[in-house]
Amino acid sequence: MSDRKLRLFVAADIPPEARALISSSMEVLRERVEGSRWVDPKNLHLTLKFIGSYLEEGLPRLEKEILAVGERCAAFTAALGGCGAFPSRRRARVIWVGMCEGAEGAGAVARKLDARLEDAGVKREERPFRGHLTLARLKSPVDCASDLDELEARLRGLSDMVFDVDEIVLYSSILGPHGPTYVELQRAPLGGKPSEKG
Image (cartoon, rainbow, N blue to C red; front, side):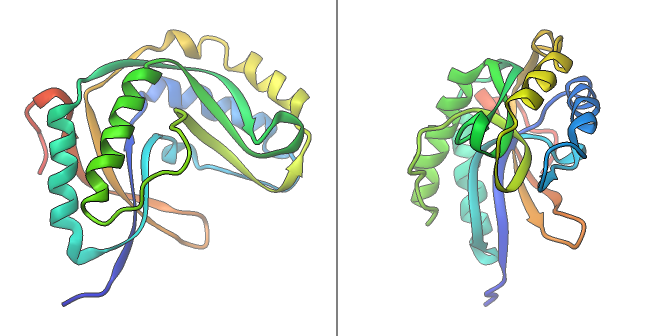
């Protein structure tokens, strides 16, 4: 019996054109925001449920629950837009891009994942779901209000890149010296769409 643990999360992918615009917009701020660690653009995704450390031997049960969530949740249309920081623009620890369309659909999937995965031993979220893509994490709080205004201007047009979310993806996050590598473990169609993989 294996006691190996994996670092897991469930997410929705974003389209290449949105990824490209966000990536080029982030590039300008990389050097400017003090003590910031920016997400590799290929790792940008809409997190629906962070699972965290999970025993590998429990994966079959977990994957079964995620498939069940997919069968019970409708596909939805989404668009990204706007940016901000947690806990605030003037004391930023996390810089993010938000959702300007599809937040309700994403929230429904997140709540269903929260409920179903609790039965598979995953802790429930303590905070309400807020659909966003994390762009950067900061070592200590920074006032980056003016940088975020510039980022928002550079992201103009992002809200027009509407996309369908018709599946959710279980990823494993493998931490390395140059940041995490995400490995796809499972795709679960939303609304009963036939699965192409696995």
